[in-house]
Image 1 (cartoon, rainbow, N blue to C red):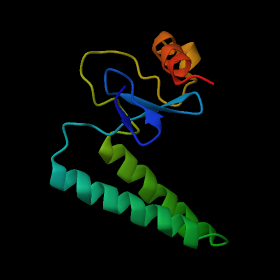
Image 2: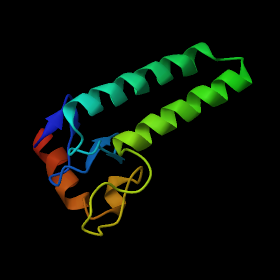
Image 3: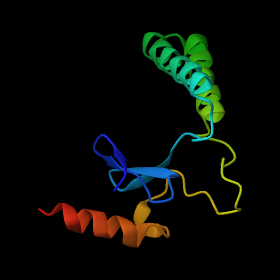
Length: 111
C-alpha cells in the first residue's frame, strides 16, 4: 500500500484516505521546483488563515490564497489526470469504486 505517513494512497495515485474520505493528491507530473514553491505558498496561506481570525477581509484573502495554491497543485479544480475518469475528491470512499480496495486495507490492518 503506497502511503505518505498514516494515510493510504489509492493504487492509481489519485487519492489518499483520511477517516474514510478520499482527498485528491497533488499532480505527480509537477516539476519538483514548482511543487516546492506551490507547497511553500500553500503553507504560507494556511498560516495567514490562522493569523487572520477576526479580520474578515484578511481571512477571505488568505482562504483565496489557499484555494489558488491547491488548484495549482491539482488538489482542487479540474482533475489532473487525462483519461476521463470521474473525480471522487472529498467523497466517502465507501461510495466510490475505491471501496473494495479500502475495505481490504482496513481488514489487513486488523483490530
